[in-house]
Image 1 (cartoon, one colour):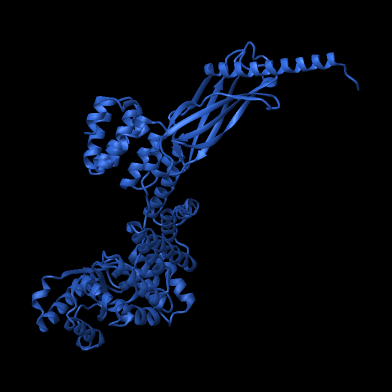
Image 2: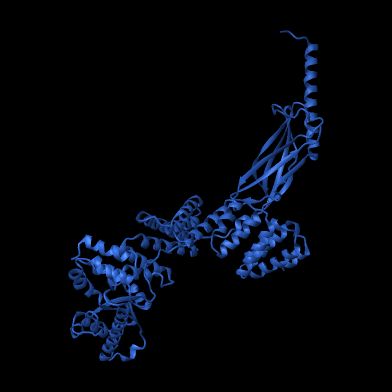
Length: 600
């Protein structure tokens, strides 16, 4: 195709005109961008969970967005000379056909991952005007639209719960019974010489001479059912009195007069009671099953004691199998001697446990319950470890593994060296997993939840805490697990759920603090104020409680309370004063004389 010079000139002029027009339009858009409305919520920016999230909204002036043009808004978080690129969004003219008469508006949700090294800075935007193909671009200067960074959510207190499995040892005084029966002739309450020389009397004498610590001796006189009611009542009471006198006499004979008054003697008659007879029938070998059933049907049937005895007396086998065989065993005085169970003292158990762990004596010197109990008698964690390691060798039980893992968790909580802390946490996890292989338990699950919390593995901590809550563990264990769940919820930015979980936990200081913090972060300021007041009353030497009470007051625009609480926090720990001067929570008060005076 051949073009003449004139046509070429015309095309060139048209192209130049278009370029000039485009350039002019883009410059005009950039110029008008100074009048755009840019808003950010929340402002200042805040950390929640592990990110900084916000909504940015841009509204353009009428007639700013030109035909066949794009206006882009790119956002950055700027700290000094460093920038974190957050993203951008476009106003495309074809999507806003009424831009000549209406104000185009776009709202976008943006976020970035929080890192501890990210400090205070500015959220800035840069506007760019361009053609649809973005071959020509004109940009605005940086425009700061919000400040950051509020990091109050990072002040959540670490919470863990350590649960030791029950050692099974009762260190309280226990009474054990010894029973001696003395038998009488029908209708009599005189103790025969044969009884005083028999095996029961010899047992009683041996018991007395052993000098067992005795608390109570009960003598229950009994009677066989035959005979009148009055006669039976007298027999039962007389038999109990006779045996009480006999026991006291034997104690005096063995020169134990001084302890008689320290023992509570209870003598009584067991009258019109078929229960001893039922027990005798159950054990009897001569009565047939049918005969036993027949007698028991009479005893359990209607009628009073005498009427039932009369029915029994009419049975064809009464004289031979009941009167002559069964009833003699009921003509007795049952003597129950309640003595104190011999036990090692706590000091003895502690000493022997130490000798076991040092290899001086055999692990069998203490039984499993005593050795497990020994672990509770020392506050020294390294000694606990040695004891529970010995218990594992002795029993290889879930209790031993759980309690050793619990000690590792306690040691990790107070360890300042990060490498040592990590090593202790790993030991705890391995040991507690062994416990669960032996037996499922809420104690091991809650201890694992604490171990994972200390290592920062939130998902595993949450999983184990949920298992502890679902277990058949004690209420204390479940409350501890709920405290862990609530703390994880705060860390994850789930404040409503956090308050629910923490409300089901215990009354520990960390739970009080984190509950108040969750209320603050969900902007329930009145509840947060009351919560921190409750916490500072319980922990008056913890500066963090007063500091967050000051933060709450700042959000409520209560400068007087802010000043008072900030003064207390700074007086307890200077680090909170240092934090306050750069904390965006107090941005509106940085130039206030009251604020400055509070930090002097």
